[in-house]
Length: 294
Image 1 (spheres, rainbow, N blue to C red):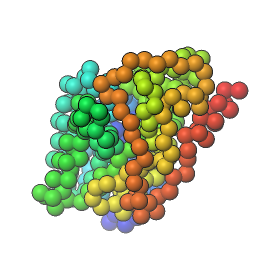
Image 2 (image 1 turned 135 degrees about the horizontal axis):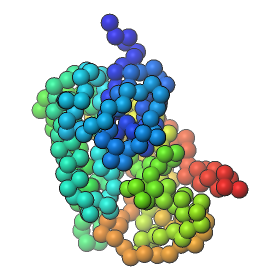
Image 3 (image 1 turned 120 degrees about the vertical axis):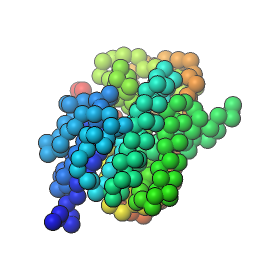
Image 4 (image 1 turned 90 degrees about the horizontal axis):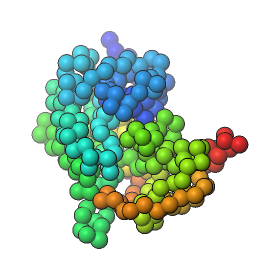
């Protein structure tokens, strides 16, 4: 008989940046953790002791996963906005076909699904009228999948919760060369004395959120969350120019891209109602990076 406190938890994308931190926390909490990752951006360097790692595509999840999980954390999707313009085929493969495979697996199991939605869908319409969900192939796929998760739950009476991430940063981030994140790209620029490249106008903002805060929110959503709308984001909002100046060094403004946007801090009251609190700030992280270089 299974220990009531110990759960079998499947994490798609468990070898990735956020997924590896989530796996680490779940193992620490004494759960049985299985990772399914195709290693498109995940890395075996991110493996955590105590996790069972399976290499494979989420569209083939039924072939790869023979266990019956209590919780499925679905993080294993393509996750770069601008790069998705160059790779729409990967969006269709990983985010549409892959997520459909996960939803079908979920439908046939008693598991609770935690879907990692994208905060880009909350971005206000730009001057040209384009809304956040339609900014790029990536943002469209994520918004569509959030809709599909809600419908699957309603159609088939399934337990679920949807969380939203906000420019997550911290250890194990990917750099620009590997479908990377803004903060890691700026960190590498700082460490290697390279010029920061900031897309114009440079005043576009983000609510940068530490990976540990993100993971603590995900764990709470897995334990107690129900339904949509769990925004896990920092209170502080910084412009890209401001962040480059926080790191220091020279910067240059590059042409605006088709995905240029500003994101503010969303209402986090729903995740806070589960007991979540922000514990980290971007400034503290950058100061720690700079102290290690001295």
